[in-house]
Image (cartoon, rainbow, N blue to C red; front, side, top):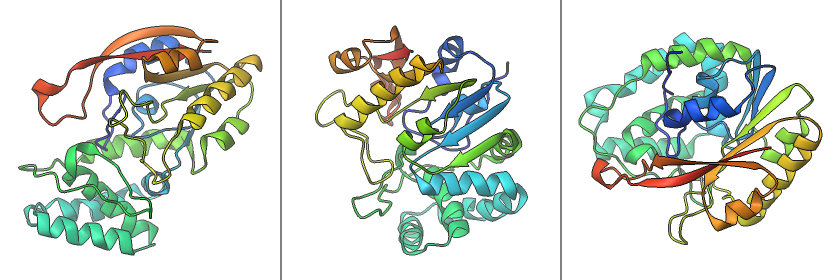
Length: 268
């Protein structure tokens, strides 16, 4: 199968792990993703239908717009990939505009611009909900037109929701398969990227996710969870079959500093 890239840059994206993940997922029925992120697993799997959720409302609104009106969205987004917008002053003006508006179409268009022009594919909000990723200083940010169209086409098999992961688990039924890619447990106290939504993802959330996975598994709904390989996660997922994999971290801009770390796939 030809691998498809997501149109968004995404810290912790699963493009490089698709083969390992697909080996652990039964490819039938409906795939449910409580933390869809950039959608690499969705784009590179073959289920009859998908329930794709994320707590980030900007992300889900963008996906719904691309699903229902791709040509207009792609046309409007493309305008911001002119060289005049690849400038720190313009970037911060647009970021301010994004944070000031509640118009979902405007926010969706500007979200893609900031994702491709901001620092290293980060998606981060402050405690007040303001997008605060700094300018990325790329020579010529790539406009992902092919990837946008590919997502729009595949999204016809998907339902998008903007709930917490608990509600998504409540929406599952027999015949579903659940894949969870939560914000990872931090490798160290200073290495936490858990603010994709402005709400954070705390230890109690990690614990509750593991409990929900066990409950779903008891109801004959398979669950697969990705996370860092830590003493904490091995304890949380002790009821699952664990597979250890080595992956390159992509949070550093310098390729030479992208060291390999161990991750776990926990299969319930």
